Image (cartoon, rainbow, N blue to C red):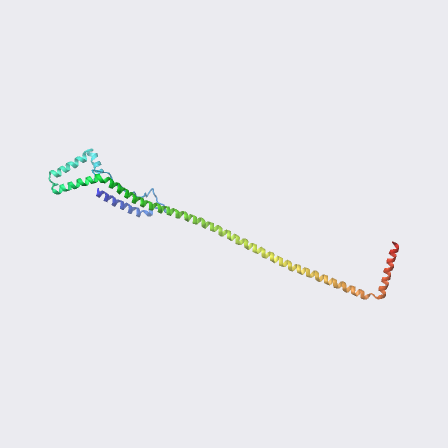
Length: 245
């Protein structure tokens, strides 16, 4: 029984080592395990036994050749042969061992199931603890993947925000360009209006001075006699117009 457990533990370690070696090939490009071609190792369970220590395979081996009673007949016959030929001598150590065997058998049948249940619970607790750690690690990695996807989504949003800011800067530059263009237009128009007003003012001043100069020269050219004659003629014309009315 103990030898079978030792062999199975060694085989389990070898399979675990093989799984660790093949870990690189058991995972694909994205890091996910190929559960179909590389299944996860399962904790081995001891096989069935009879009489507390005899493997079930031995009985199956005899059952195909001698029937159901074959293993028991073989065991009793072998023990009888050893004892009758004094190959196995029944000295005082034999009875001591027999007493110990009876006590062990009693303890096994009395306390064995409870101890087995307790040990199974402890093994299940350790296995559940290992699985819990693995599940929590998987959840943590999945959460990290989701956070990474969210970070990528935020990064894409930042790209859109940067594009919007660039567009806003271009609009501000366009507004500043139009404002400066309007300012240049206003300044040029104001200066042209100033030049026009200046030209009009110079023309009016020149016209005024010309009129005053002509009037002054005409007034200088008129003598007092001509002025008196003109005044008399005007009075006569007015009198004639009054008489006609």
